[in-house]
Image 1 (cartoon, rainbow, N blue to C red):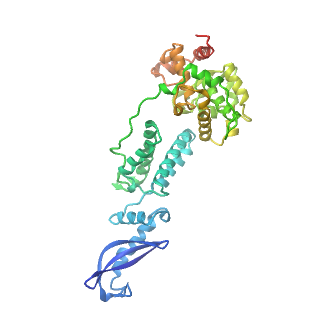
Image 2 (image 1 turned 90 degrees about the horizontal axis):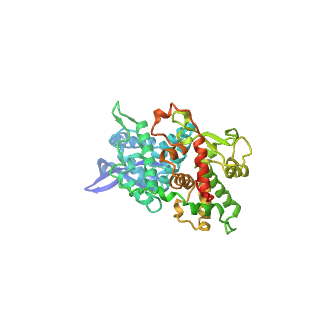
Image 3 (image 1 turned 45 degrees about the vertical axis):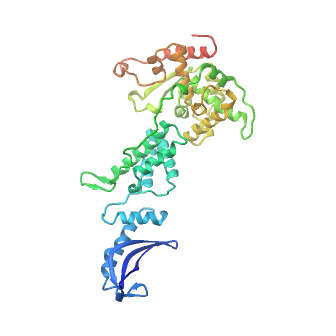
Amino acid sequence: MKLSIHLKPKGNEEYYVYICLTHQSKRVLMATPYVIGAEHVKKGKIANRAKYAEIYNNELLKYEERLGKIPAAEKLSLSALKEILCASKTTDNEVVEFFSEAEKCIKEMEGNPKSRRTAMVYRSSLNLFKEYTRRTALYTFEMTSKMMQGYIDHLASSKEPATIVNRVTIIRRLFNKVKDVHNDYDLGILNVKNYPFKRLRYPEVISQAGNKALSVADLRKVISAPIPEGKGYRAYELEYGRDYFLLSFYLIGINPADMWDLTKDQLKEGWITYSRRKTQRRRGGAEISIPVSSYAMELLERHKGRGEYLLDVRDNYKSLESFVLQINRKLHKMYPFFNLDMDKEYFTWYSARHTWASIAANECAFSDEEVARALNHQSMHRVTRGYIRPNWSLLERMNEAVLAVIQNEGR
């Protein structure tokens, strides 16, 4: 990558002076305010460099300084480099590369045990945005409302409205983090001046909560329907996915992240006691004790972990993210065998939690407050709840009632 002086005939025996950027046998020209006479040009070059030293000192050296400050400059196209170099002509402000700075933010989150799972979601969202831009480097000033609206429209062809909002919101949060790192508002130093998230149009988010819960009849199909051998998979591989879906249901909608973390010492006398990872920051750690039915115990025995962990998920998967992804893929492969009254896209791991809650409320007539407590949601009476010693026997009664519905025994 090289910068040089380039002359272009103007006519009237004069030449325009350009800065030429050359890289991999290609070049782009950037205009300067200088014009020189033909008498000072020899073989297409300035003959008297001393006379025109200001061109080299005021223009060429400044462009070289700007080029040296651009992170990962070799990864950019010449047109992108030209845009950056020209944009920084009138300012000494720092040029900020978004992708690398966002990566730093995510790595910082990964270093904190409480935010590692959140970091996974952030990394996934950043990678999706990178795929859309088809860029290895993206500078903050290049991010415009037009670019972000294009990203939203692109996602609309394959993602649910709520997913689109979440994905773009994460990019906005990363942008804000980068902005806060590189701007000093007290000193008035604004290296990141733009804000590309205004006036964006999102698809309408329609609540699909009801669609995420299986009916009692559909749940029975998931429990009992045979899974045949097929091309590209083994039946036992899909059975593994069904087992974990049902284990989540039998354990009152326990989340994958909490399954991943369960250790053998958390199972005592027919109860599993744990703190939900999602709400660990809540006062008291959001601890909950859930009863282990005979159905759940059978699956726990079948998928017992080798070491300290209760389940075999860490023996079979490298990360929580891959665990969740593969289980959902297995569920989607099984979908045709069940003939469910539910769209395929909603048949995911979290359907188990929605299904348990819906049966408890609609079939067993437990109150919303009781269902919320069973799911370990934050109570509307937070202060009062702090004075009451937890009694988890309600969860045992609720779970027995839900399982009885599945067995056709009623409440």
